[in-house]
Length: 316
Image 1 (cartoon, rainbow, N blue to C red):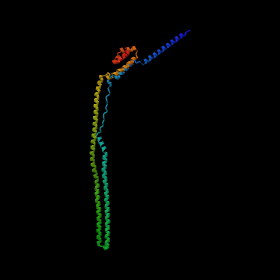
Image 2 (cartoon, rainbow, N blue to C red; image 1 turned 90 degrees about the horizontal axis):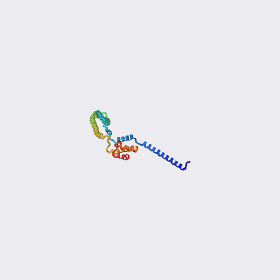
Image 3 (cartoon, helix red, strand yellow; image 1 turned 45 degrees about the vertical axis):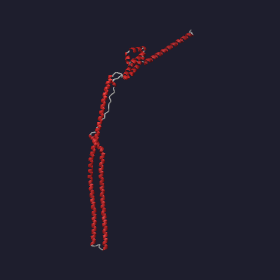
Image 4 (cartoon, one colour; image 1 turned 90 degrees about the vertical axis):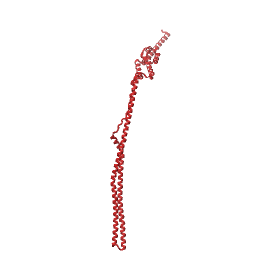
């Protein structure tokens, strides 16, 4: 029969075995987790190669040459300039010709109005003469009746004189009308010639204006063409300067190909140190010590400063 003491001893041994099994399981789990996070040698070398790509100078790092956009000036031809000049003066030509024709038409209308006024004046003069000599004839007739000479030779003579004066006045009025109408008709006939002269004079002025406008547009074309040539020549000079600079940069980079710029060395070695430290941390203490002490790859990958930092941590 088991004693109480033996029971307690057995319970203590069972608890110890359970604790040992639990600790073993924890160590196994930690080892598995560590194995999962350990950096392999291949991963380490790949990471170091990527650092080289980021920091090491290469001729492939040259920027592409700058491409400049040139001015493509499509210069108008002489024929196009002449047409453009005509179009620019079309309004001026149309308004000037219209003004000349309108002036001639206005003068013609005024002349026609003068003809009408002359005819009306002649009709009034004839009417006034008829009325005046009619009154004189009646007065003479009444006077002769009073004197008893109505059928005398005196009456016939006086009546003939009055009639003669009346006819002369009417004839004079009509002659004056004919003269005025003839003058006005002559003026009207001259309006067409005057208008044609004015149009011919304008054509000369227009031709001079057109020539001047063509000269202006031609000068403008040449100025724009020269500006384009000058600008494009400037770009050619820039491209030549860029080419020389690119050659200098190429020579400089080729001379430093495979090197790390001095101002980036500290960052370069620190990045490599971080990778190698992570790799060594995944090895056993003995493997890490041997690797740091004997592997030339590790030594050559770091500067003295960062190598001895690794040595102090893993090589002792």
